[in-house]
Length: 437
Image (tube, rainbow, N blue to C red):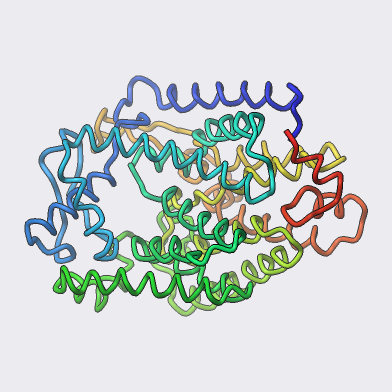
């Protein structure tokens, strides 16, 4: 990685701007919408753990807690039984200590995820890589998926780190590779999508290890909380309406896009299934091509983004795989000789940044509703623009798939440099020099 200040100084300035954006917006009129003002989901995790310890059904009603001191409506517990068991230790500390610890853990995992990405790309663990990783982690705080993950106290970044750990373990020939994604699927089902990716890339043992780990989490649920396990796996799992209507702009999945474009509250199941099959085939097909071309982190990132696309309901904060994508845009820009490649990182950031818009609304704390992310913006916006921004994350997936496919197919010198420069499997002297600190 270049040691010149031409890289680190701009990144440092952007990191400072990111901190300002995260802390300053929304403004002082809306403290509940501030970075540490909500933390609803970590409290729902706590409520789930409390329900298990007190033999309260997890899935037969809404959970609530009176010990948070915050504005929380009763919420459903939508995660598998194993996750509820995993969350029981959260009840053993005070809510404020739990929230502070979870926030610190999430920040540490964000930095770790970026370091893991650079390691997967073959960069040395030197001082420059540490500095660049730290700057990118701070810049990532202003991305809506990361900012909302912190704001809600969500678990998305932990799940991504577990999958990245599997990827690195496989590259190192570790026999335990697969446990991470198996645990992630046990906590929240969607990472099971990576089993398909492991299979098509020939990682049979990894798939088996991951699947067996997941089955272990399921079995643990049936052994320790059998009533909740039966209820979840026989009905709750298939009830997507417990979360919300498909057409909500917060639903940044293919199903949400179909519903919004069709003007329906709920997307037709047949249309979603056909569309999901096409999206999965396209996303995983391009990811497989990238993997075979030596771009294994790019392939993994495409698989993660495709996972969020085909999920029945994808909140904006589920798109944390945009963080590895941001790392990849910087990586390819470093290896390119064309200036326009450096447009990729800022364009990605602009599309995924935590833009905010505040509206008066007495139904919320501070008497205001704050939309966060392009897809939540409203007002007098032309229809074509509104249709674009309300589906911005699916559009990022589409652009990423198309650009990756074009770059992999291209035989031009520029594309060859973009594709082959500095990947973990590129033994060329220039690639090795690129990764030195």
